[in-house]
Length: 542
Image (cartoon, rainbow, N blue to C red; front, side, top):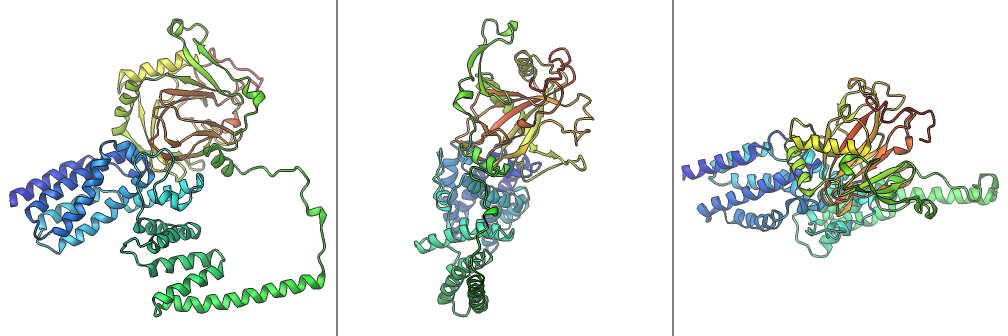
């Protein structure tokens, strides 16, 4: 018995050792696949333990079998499975919350070896921040892609392979996380979904009274007194002694009377003064308020609001391209497609092979760390909620393939790569995104790349290394452009005019990944070394 438990302890320690250096699991699907395999192996170990003490742990065995079934499906295609944001959220929730419940259950028995091992290893599991981050990612996806709660809760997202319905507990957890942020809009949505599933007869450890308590208060906070009062009355019909609800009932009724009184006074005042039309306040016909950047960004992510006219579209072409008879491409020119005219964005098709992609991903995965941004005030690199991904940097010292890819970019762009930044590889997590930003340093950031000594970022080359089932576009809100990921392609644009001035129309964003797994890699090309390759010109149209 002691030998079996010691072996189990050593086995689990080995499984989780490699995870101890990684944090922010939810920001990278690539890292989350490791958790999925870990969970599968832990379930297998748990089943072996159950075999020995089955008579004492029958309840634990049933719980393990449920996870076993899920894991068997998941590891057939880990990245595809975790590409569904609900599966990713539930993985975070299981490892952060439900295994802790199991720990409490087993503590009631004489299972000291297993418990001490599980308790020790849980420090390598996703944290509360991971679970919260995955939950907030679902809320972000809901807003960006205009998804109703039932669509998400039933798993009916576009392009999904692995449907995963959400339980009452899952919906309740999302509502609670929104509530803790004083986000009463999403609190209402997800508590309403929890209530709906309870009303449909779904069994749950969450009771209707608890859900109604959150729901009524969230609705009240949004100013809907009548509905808040309605749900409070329903709560009291189930638990007449609920102290908070009884207090809320009296308060809501008082507020309703006060509200009606104020409305009557305002109506009377209006009747006494008469209605005076003020045409000067009317907006001019045909005038349209500019769409805020955030709304335009989200519209483009949904494939709406693209501002390409038929006339401009007719001037975009596809061609075989050899970059002015570059010897590497004379006999086998590449396929080049115009994606946009202003700023000029081109896409290169079949420019990186599947085997090259897999090699780059395998090199990058152990090096992935939470992506950072440069604080515009302090200049310090820090994480930000508007950039949800992990990234790694690769050079030719890591593998000759990187030099080969860099040479390919140089041959096709005609730009010097010796002064470019290292290749950055990024993997996006649950709802992974990077909100609108510039690649180049603006005039109010004169020291943005001072330490590199290579000038500003003159151009960007971006490889798409996976197809994305839904979402994940690269959008340019200022000009209404959207470029969709396509495995094996790359897009290229200049961030600076030939005069060295920044092209502000290149402000772009990576849309949240709704379904799928997004891997990209990019090269930021700098000014130094381009003096004879892209000569300076005072004409900003060039």
